[in-house]
Length: 402
Image 1 (cartoon, rainbow, N blue to C red):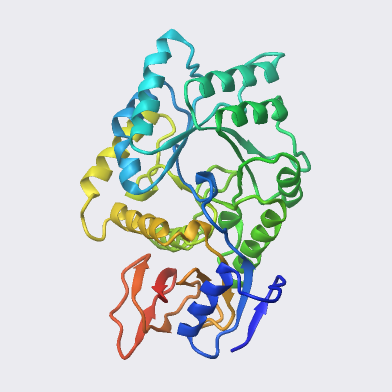
Image 2 (cartoon, rainbow, N blue to C red; image 1 turned 90 degrees about the vertical axis):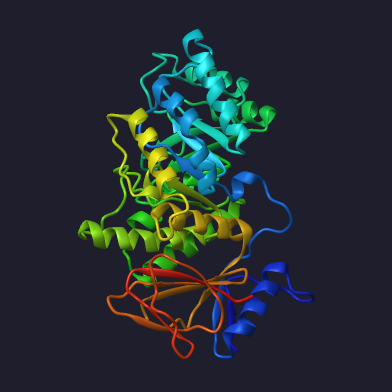
């Protein structure tokens, strides 16, 4: 068995990540070549380094907050442990908003869901934008919010968020044991690098999975680069399938049915990657949000989630199973090693703990030897015959090596 590394393993006892990889490789056979790109975490880790964040799309008003309060149970049932919502026009200190805000936070926390709010990138505050943002952040933190999101920064070569005193915000959230998060498009790699090194956010998500060609080599390269950049500064990866420059999901130039199949494969691939994962509102029930009706969209998503709950093969149950396995198998804090001799040149394959993840990015079926349990697949698979399963195009599968 040949084994290659991107880092120096050192001498003596194997690190936990390497022990897991060695056990998995023993089960893959003697011809496997792997490349370790991320060691994974040791011991218990903060929630935000492995979170599944349910992202409410669009702008929420008081009606939308009330709707989310009523329907927040579906977020917990899905398996998310944090919720990101944009509320630029809502001040929790406003007497007309206080009861709605407190009810929303109370219901979310009762269900084990942390709440991150965003109100950045608005014209509020007039000349004193910095003072307005800090005051609004202080008000939300005082009401028990778990994090402040700085929104999306698209400026090339600009690592600072306009009108935001990051030092003051860091001090504010540190005192409250809250977090600062934000987003930078991978279309501006220099700006992304500057944000990671200069802003020191707890989580900075980027859209590299949405803007990278659906091909094995570029996807492998950009995922490896993410860990190379973030491990250097001690930051977790932040994964989303939303193109941050357009605030939309990629269609890859495909018809809706084909795009949906590819998106399911990309989602299951993303869910297996160590780091923090962002789940867009409506994705888990097959509904596109309506920006002009945020409260109606929240209510409709909650209704569909209730209808699909417990229905085998439904979008909600597929998503729910993926997030349950991610949590139970601790994939969010695991190591990542590429399997170099994957079945087929356009098959992306990697190990996370004792799970083998395969994504067929080609236009034809790939035959995969399977001697262990298939944990999950993005779409239905044909039954295994003689220890071989047929992996269709645009399909991801998780295989247990335990």
